[in-house]
Length: 71
Image 1 (cartoon, helix red, strand yellow):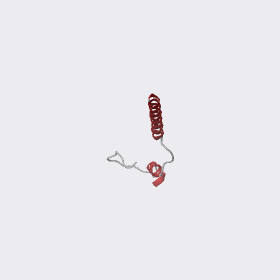
Image 2 (spheres, rainbow, N blue to C red):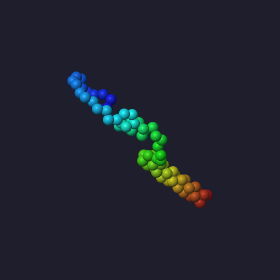
Image 3 (spheres, helix red, strand yellow):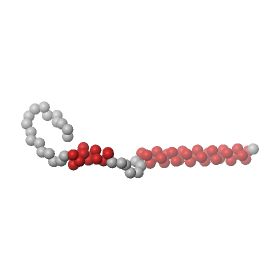
């Protein structure tokens, strides 16, 4: 995993994967691919915006109707 905390001694290493077959390679591959669809956070933000805009449109319409009726 890109280094060690050992400062002295001897050891034998075994390479079991290189490039895209390693954990870092798989993460790099996943992060470089284009995303499909919206993330969960983006879905929640979109839902919140739709609710707020709907409320604003409703109240503006209500105020306009009441204003026209009062005149």
